[in-house]
Structures are given as C-alpha cells and as structure tokens.
Length: 304
Image 1 (tube, rainbow, N blue to C red):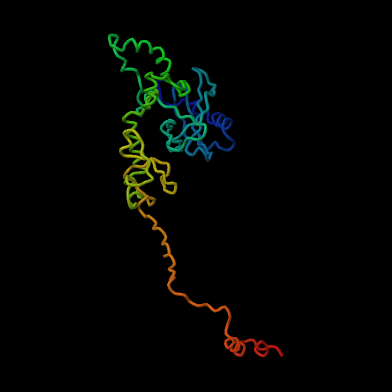
Image 2 (cartoon, rainbow, N blue to C red; image 1 turned 120 degrees about the vertical axis):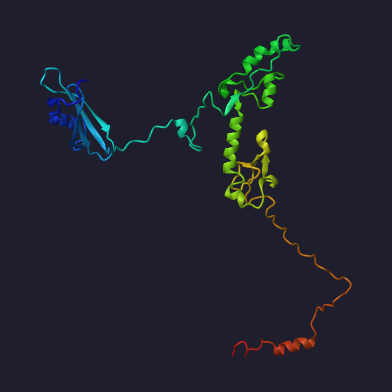
C-alpha cells in the first residue's frame, strides 16, 4: 500500500455502494453514509448506518475497487460489521463451562474428559508380582482371564459377573472394579459442594435444635467421606434423600421434640364391700304424690 488517501473515483461511488447495501439488506434498513476508508490502492470501503433495531450500532460496509489505469469502479463485497458502539453477543463459552447442576434431563449424556481431575485410574494391576515371585505361576494362569475381564470403557463393556476367586472378583467386592474412581481432588470438591448446600453454616443448620450426628434418621455412608457425611432419611425433612454433613441439622431431628404419650385414664374403682339396695317397685305413696304434682293433668297439657 503506497497511500492511505482514498482513490477519488472509488470514493465518489457512494450511490453504487448504497445500491449494493440495499440489495443485501432488508428494505429501509440502510441509513446515511458515514465515511469512506481507503483499504489499499484503488480500494475503498463505504460505511452506511444500519437502522435495523436488532443491529444497533452496526454498519453496512461496501468495498469497491478499480483496476490500474481503469476508470470503471467495480463492486468488491458487501458485509454487515459492528461499529465502535455496536450491540454484540456475549463472548462464547464452551458447554463444559456453561453446564450447571440440574441442567441434565432425561436422555442427556454428559461426557467426561480423559484427564478429568476429579477421577483417577481404578485397579490397574500394578500389584502383580515379579516373574520370580512364588505366586507368579498362578498370576500367569489368570492373566488372560484378568485382561478379558477388566477393560476400560463404558459399563456395557464390563462383564456381568467376574470369575470367582479372581482379582476382579475381589476388586468388585471392594468397589474397585471400575476403569476410573474418584481422586482426592474429586472427593474434596464433592465434600465442599455438599457442605455448602447441607452443612453446618447454612441458615437451616444454624436454627436447628441439634445436629445430624445425633439424629436417628441419619443413614451412614462408607468410605472416607463417611466420617463427615451421611444421608438423611426423614421424609418430612428438607434434606430427605440428600447427602448431609454431620454438622447439619433441621427441625425434623428425631430427638428435638419427642411427643409425650397420651395420658391413660385410671381404672375404675369398684367397692365390693357395700351393697346399695335397689327397689324394683315404687311405693304406693310415691306414685300418688307424683300423680298430683306432675305435669300430667289435662289443664297443664292445654287440653280443654
């Protein structure tokens, strides 16, 4: 490029540039001419405002050019470009960074990176004795079977039941017969996440009468995390079915408010030492008195 001064013929081709922009844009969305910028020798780009409401601050850029010693200006390209104050979409973020807990739905698959820091290799066979070991013959005899049984891949690639007495059977009993298991980093991040949602610093735990460590609804879990976490089994509690910290607590604690038993009435007392006589017939005097004083007469009943 020998000069940054716009070519005169190319700079004067505003009408041709506007016609090219109007042909590419929606009708009525090409605004006024903003400027003409020299992109090279006999190459000029004309900028027009874009009046489309969805592209605020964008500009139509129409590039024109002419050949050396030629007087005819030709159209190079037409494109919509953002201006200095253009409304732009947010920067693209990979899906692995956009994913949040609870985003997965039925049928969704969440792939894990081969170098995921939360996972580490499972049983790898590093404990196989050297060739001169006393048990090397037995290990050689089981090598083919072990190689066929423990493979890295999806759960469908693993055999259903390992052979009895093999290392795979022992590893499965210990919960190790997996291609990858949680690393210390994965354990720590899980513990931090669970403690943040159901830990001792939550408002629910701060207002609880007691912690989960003394609750009868707490189900213990195995592994190293079992020393600090458990599973809530109170169907009326706010954390039912969730992993909770032993320092967590809620109003559904099993010993927080034990309902008293309803009082039982005392048994009736029967005195069998005394006998009260009960006449079966009334005396003649009592019958006559009742007839005279009772409301049995025709006058009191309203009869004439």
